[in-house]
Length: 95
Image (cartoon, rainbow, N blue to C red):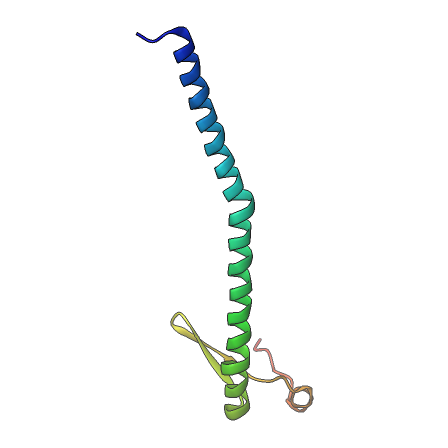
């Protein structure tokens, strides 16, 4: 049978273990998770920059436009030329 001091020591050890576990969880949520999110955001920005500089711009320069498949539709991107806009006749709306 355990004495009263043995029970007290066991409770103290369990409480210390719980506090350490909670401290590790808080450390993970505050420090490590934030650093990981920053790393992921930085790599996402690098990927977007790579796509623009190595795929989008060269295609635009050679073809004059870029096709982006989105689901079962295609989005066409072309450079905007304000002079072409003023040369086109106004679109008529059917009545």
